[in-house]
Length: 504
Image (cartoon, rainbow, N blue to C red; front, side, top):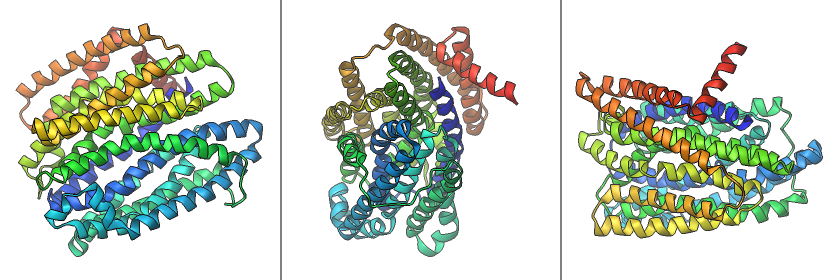
């Protein structure tokens, strides 16, 4: 059950960061709107940020944490030597990638946004790439020490660190945009990356996790490389679906990439707030169970993680679909961001939201496979999911003419294919009956929540109250309904809160 507590801690920290994230989006939208300039920046930001999602939230942790846990059980000193050796080679690889992309920036832009050659913002995008891409090294270091802190069950500081990136974007938009234009956002990204890294250092020192980098090759480096390549490919294929979106969107109207970006940012709230935290905490927990050969605890934690995923995903999905337009209007419609921009952003949000349950289910499955040392199955699952999403993207965008909605919906389709493949390949026991009962209870409670929100819309005097009370009353309705139905994950969640309050 410890992984649930760690997930909650990570989620609280991430919630703080995400609130600032939406303030950041509102400020950036106010100053820059949705146009060719913002499209150029978000394509430039896509390159290091996609790799960030690999090194900070995916393949690196999947390969590093299980091996580090095993080494620590043998000897804490050996684990520190392993970390020091790996960090050095990890930094070299990130630096080589950064130099390569900076030199060939224009070529990379032509690949991920081929439509920009005709629109005339190819060179601007390449210049932004050269400025912003060193962020990869800074966030790579941040992710490394985040993983180390996670192994010590320290999740709050790593979870709250992205708040500094959001503050940096806000600062650069307000104080630098009038002097630097769109380049202010690139400067904000670099400053934010540095601040995230520095924030983790005091706790890293306190936990005794600091080390002196060394090029001495630890015996487990070779094993890590074997694990990290398929894991990197697995998460890389998953992230590649967003690259496909960018390629296809570059041929649509000006602002399409920005609409997808903002829609995805709102969609990422439940993923970043809970699902990613669940995956990180679960990986640590399952790695320990597997190393101890405690397969009963392994299965119990995995089953509970599916229930928690449903508990978060279903109401979040419904909330984004039935309250998403109002949320976008409140967050973004002001200054240079118009009401028409909000409508197109909402279409993208709905397309992404429909796939939330699929994304949520892949996390526990992948954590289980990685904890067992199997990085090939997740690789194959994401490859199959990507192929499905590409086919659907071409169909939805160019045949059905669904534009940004079609691109987002195609990604959702691929997420479900991915999770189904993982389910078919997973051979260890999961209490499916218990998970299915939890699904039915959450479906009923979500339906009740949606009806409450729709009634509230009719009687609400203005949009701000609709959003505020829609989220508040909707959440209370959902939770109350689940408590009446005695849904497992809801009861566990409240028991954890009760224990915390009793200690105060």
